[in-house]
Length: 353
Image (tube, rainbow, N blue to C red):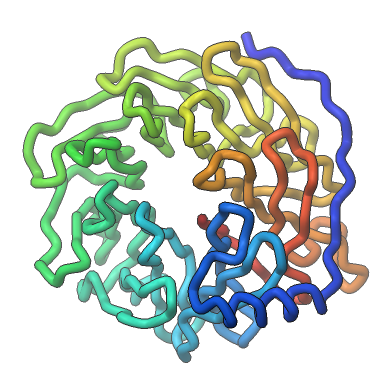
């Protein structure tokens, strides 16, 4: 049974806006050298230009860069493992248009933009392969749901599975398997398959979702409704040994592995408000990291494993108590040293390292 660790509240640090500009000048002077203490910039989505765009912000200075700079809506960026590319979704027309979404990639420097898919439909849950050459994604085209694998070298995407898959969870560290969640009238659970479309295996048979392969390749974390509530589980890579990590009446979701495969960061509503927690996989010890009066979410570990980027809704007197401005923050893995990276009246979401 999960144990809740004693915690304390950490103050948040708000950097003056001018520090970001000074840091940005320094970054330009060194021409492409990462201007952080060992961490790459955080990439995110913002609607500050009347449409959704992909931005990057430096962790230690707050300097921001508009990467996409186009008239279409770009959102949900995912940085490649080699840190050279950003995969994202692009949507023409209004922000509410979900039927004309394509999957694209762009270099971290904002050049070499290319489209991975041309099939109209709702693309989602795009996940990079470990070698940063391929992308698995879910596609809902005219009601037909499937999983495909595209690549950045221009080859035509291949159909990974004809099962009615809802979500791609990710790749095994070896790149030999893709894990995905299925839910339809005939099948449900978590499956895996070779990215070439062979050797399909069912790993679970319950109402499970959001599978995430651990960096060491040994385990898969996922969200399950098998006990009547959204809880976090882990299982071995072959589907055996499923273990429940959380146990409460609220909804637990949005999981991300630590680089050392020892912990998961997640969002829980067990205190009546979405907040960020970590759970140690082997001991089950749970630690609460955020204490926001509105809500926090979308946590993701930094590549070094020393920080967590997340979205926090900052109170705004012009908005309701349930809303507020969505801003990008980073914090240490114990919840300390919370630093606000963006500061504007728009929505900054979907952080990725």
